[in-house]
Image 1 (spheres, rainbow, N blue to C red):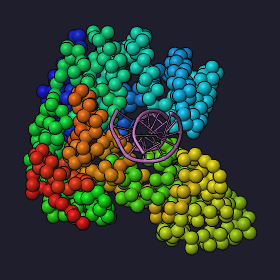
Image 2: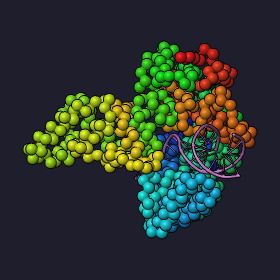
Image 3: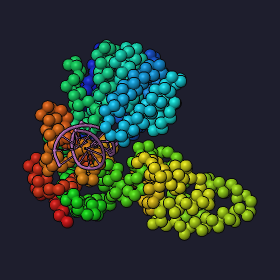
Image 4: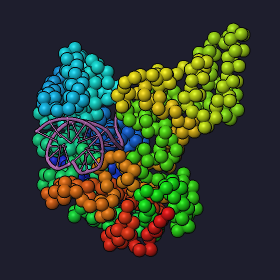
Length: 601
DNA sequence: CGACTATATTTTTTT
DNA sequence: AATATAGTCG
């Protein structure tokens, strides 16, 4: 326990308890503090809580964080750790009637808005789209009557089964807590102490309702928010959190950084200062000096992948660290998954499928029948053939192949064996998935999921742009090699990560790639941050009115990615104007002249 | 043709 | 939430 841990412990166990917002920057040991405080609560008050049937609730942003904290608490029953979504769902689940009322209101409201748009639409195509949406909402509204209970399942739209999606679950809890003191009572009687990790990104409406709950029950309820406003990177968060809290809240802060080397702490302090006036600089606690470099390249340079490998090799010399040579030892951060796909060579397979949100989610989470078939049946089968491993091949066929069952009869077995042997010549990395799968389909070697089957036999005349059959058809034109690369990415073996996805993580060597020209989103613009691209009128308006804006938003994301690095960091910036970007990098004090390299061609 | 409007685009979150 | 692009109206 250190000072801040003791301070927080005394807030939580005081009479009355004091709620608090802990400012804990990157690498400051925030989770350590959380765990220390919780362990002391257990030691001193665990028995008391148990007798009252109460627990300390801890809310995290991701499943991964949930698992990490649970592990560090040794899965102790004094605590209940969950993601914000499952927390919300658990609380609202029993109130089917109220959820129905909420949905009725929401859906009617959506219907009115759509009706408005339909009336105003001048374009037939968009009118039809609105009408299509309208019919979906009306169907959902009608199905409400017969629903006896809801399920939380946003990936499958099961009409009539009463499904709720991510944002609905959060909104419903926020609304229930705001309007019904019963909901507040249920919460605080179960969980008199509630800690929220990554509170800077916690949904604004829910955070406000929790703060209101605390105000109304300040004698029996302690709300502890852990976070770092400089690391707010989701737009659903609450940027005004710090200034909106009641005066009687504690505001401890952790200023030390135990993660990053001295030079990196220096860099992130400068970025942080530019992102907000209220930024508190960190103090480096590591002895290591560390290395920071900025490489600037032209946006339309060819072979980005190759250039980036050259940069890794240069970094190995600059930082005297041979691990930089191997991409697997360097966490490479890109803004979007598509950029990782292009750099890793699975874009032909991934890009078409990513146009459909459900397939995309399945691809990124290894879920769904198609993805699981490809990863756990199809690929292992092909790899066993390529590796000439007949033992594994037989094991897979025995487990998954229908023809194996029928092969009890001698004649069947001989023809099956021949079909498999003939298959060998098709199994080449450069052959298309379509060719390989067609053979498997025709000879019934494995049972292929319907969506992939429909993709193989695609012959529709008209279809939507996210039609899953069409997208599978496109994706299957990719080579086996692409699927193999995707499989490595899906299993987390490739060293790529997205800028937002690595929140909370740390890596010895980080390559942060800034490439606006390749990005499809619209929220972040590194070239605006670097003063290369002019600010739009909207940007200027937002800045003048003190609203969150591209510059502050991008600066915070830049802060997050740079602060992941423990030893050394290279920022790879693509731009249309190398000279201006360099000037900004030097003038802002972020990089020294001799830390900047330019790759012209 | 200029003025205006509609649309698409990203990340993360669950059983 | 910001903006480029495609499409439509007068």
